[in-house]
Amino acid sequence: MADSRRSALLSGVFSTATSAAFFVSGVVGLPLPLYLPLSRRWIWGTAAPELSMDYFGRSLFALTVGAFATLVAWGLLHLFRRWTPTARVLRLGLAYAITALLLCASLFAYKLYGREPIPIELPGESGSDPGPMKSQ
Image (tube, rainbow, N blue to C red; front, side, top):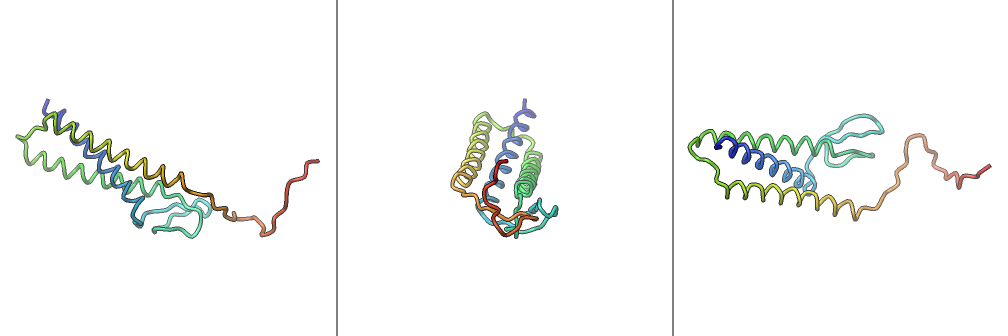
């Protein structure tokens, strides 16, 4: 029973730390790996000179932070072997995990809701507007 409680606590730590790191990477301009699909390359930075995809860099950052926090929590649980998480501690860990997940999801929903599309010029497009297509 003690091992299942420790596993539940560690999964709560991992979930909370991952969600919180993903949230922080969206709020604070942290340098992350960005993929530039038009030029098919990766860069490291906070903003890209062209169309970029930052989800993969944010996810990698969040998973790394979550794994590190879980490793630290596992080390502490290993150090204090006699301590077993109570049901109250597990409920609190679950509440933290759910709160962090909802905070992260609501932040990105808010950011995406207010975003207006900005047209960019794709490679191979000419500078002139060809006008409406004529049907034949």
